[in-house]
Image (cartoon, rainbow, N blue to C red; front, side, top):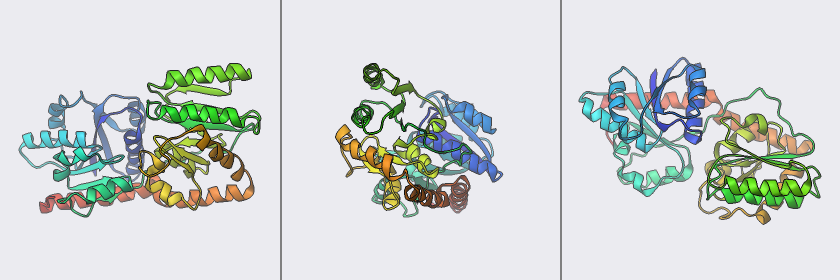
Length: 363
């Protein structure tokens, strides 16, 4: 198949990470992938795969270029968010001839206003990645029941994975005003635990409005201890190399999933807190995207809440029984989240979209 993905931009995030991994899996199965979006840090990684990237201006100024792209013979056009989906609908209507099968994916929770996006009615197939979004979509009166819950694809890395000594924690998150407090809480928790785990350190990857306060707090603690225990180096497009040597990873969504996919312990925390992920709660953790913006879990991530989580991951998974549990979780995740498994699911959805397009099926 010839597939065109359309996004708002190629900045680092969940949507572009899905795109990158989907492109890997689909290209390995012989499909041709092109991408249209504003520029961003993921552009070079996509181009390194052999993906052709069409740079667009912001919406709505991108619509004329999309109109030109849609004249080409793509089998599937895949919008990776409702804004991109509406841009595609606008361009398609002005083309005044049938276009490729149209697929829409929705990342994260589903805001109420999305019901007003025309792309929801025009898409031949719709997919989402979170159980809460799926439940909300199915509550829309006119929505067909065949909305798909798609596993997030994860790349199997060749790097050696295993905790370094002394123990080191890695946190990956947007350092916004909503997620930044969790990073500050993590620093406070490390300060408390250092006496029990000598040499304990923490690296916080991410950018955002709260980073200045996080850097200041890190510098203060480093000066107190006389060593660089806390680092906040900013954003990286691929933090896995640092994660590979971590005693545990703190994060949600793709960060948590990729860590567990490689048998690295996880404390799931972001907007809200979910906690330590183990084999008993793994399925629930995946369904709620490890607590990222999911109502009903820990509403505020504090140092007091993180302390027992950090203690548990630093002790429970350090022996043979704990490592065996991590391996069992890894095997479970690989069955659904490997690049090939997700690419196969995407192929099936794309074929359904092509068939629905030919049959003239409408929502």
